[in-house]
Image 1 (cartoon, rainbow, N blue to C red):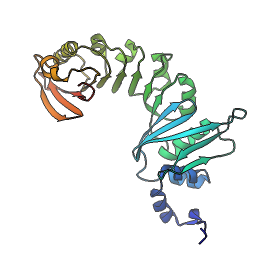
Image 2 (cartoon, rainbow, N blue to C red):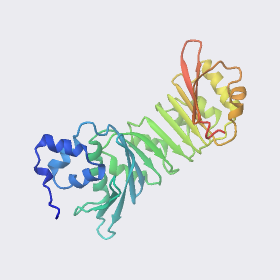
Image 3 (cartoon, rainbow, N blue to C red):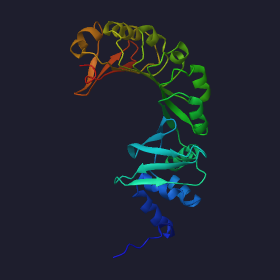
Image 4 (cartoon, helix red, strand yellow):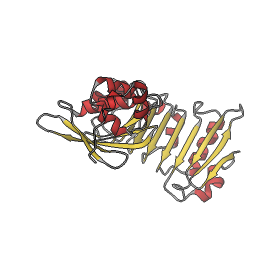
Length: 292
C-alpha cells in the first residue's frame, strides 16, 4: 500500500500543538523552515526550553543542550564560494537528515536554531576555539549568562564587555587574572588551570569549582579556616575534583581542626557542610571518582 503524504500544517491549531509536542528536535527544525507561522508556533510551544547552551567548534558544528535532551549535535556543510550552509543532523530514531534553505549561512542557521528551540531566553556558550569575536557576532542579540572558554587570547575586560549579563564562567587551561577572580560572578569553574590559595582568597563568587588541579589539601584546609573566620563572604559552595589519590586522607588533612558534617555520601559524590560562628554555612563538594 502506497504511503499518502499528510498535510500536517492543515490540522486545527489545538491538534497541531499536540502533534508538535510529540515530535523531536530535528522534526521541529524541519517544519520550522517551511513557513514563518509554523516557526513561531514551534518557538512558543509551552513546556519547551527555559535555557540551553551552544557548543562551538567554529564553524563546523554546534551542540545544543536543553531541558528536553542532554546533547544534540548539528553539523554544517559550507559552500566556500557563497558561504551558504546546509544543516546536518540525526533524528531521535537515528535517521540522517540534511536541511537546505537558499541563502542560509552558518550565522542564519544558529540564529534560526536559537529562535526555534529557546525563543529569546538565556544561553550558555562553550567556546572550544579562539576568535570569540566571531562567536559574539552570531549570539550578540541573545542574553548570555554563562561562558566556558578555552582561549588564552581573550582578555577578561573584553569578555565582560561582550557579555555584560555573564554570571557563570568556566575556564579551560587558561591563565587567570585578578579581574576575573574579583568580579561578582555567581559561579567560577577552573579546569586544568593553575589555581593558588591566594586566587581563592581574592575570589568574589558564590560557587567556586576546581577540577584537575594539584592544590594541596593543607592549603584548602587553610582556606576553609580563613572562610570560617570571615573571608570570602559571598562563597556558599566549594567544589573539588582532583585527579590524584587523596580521598582516604580527606578527613585527616582537608578538615583538620575544622568542625564539619557529612551531608551526602555516594560512590560518585560526597558533600560536607561547614559553618561560621555567625551561622553562615557553606557546602564543600568532593568527587571520589576523581579523587581516589
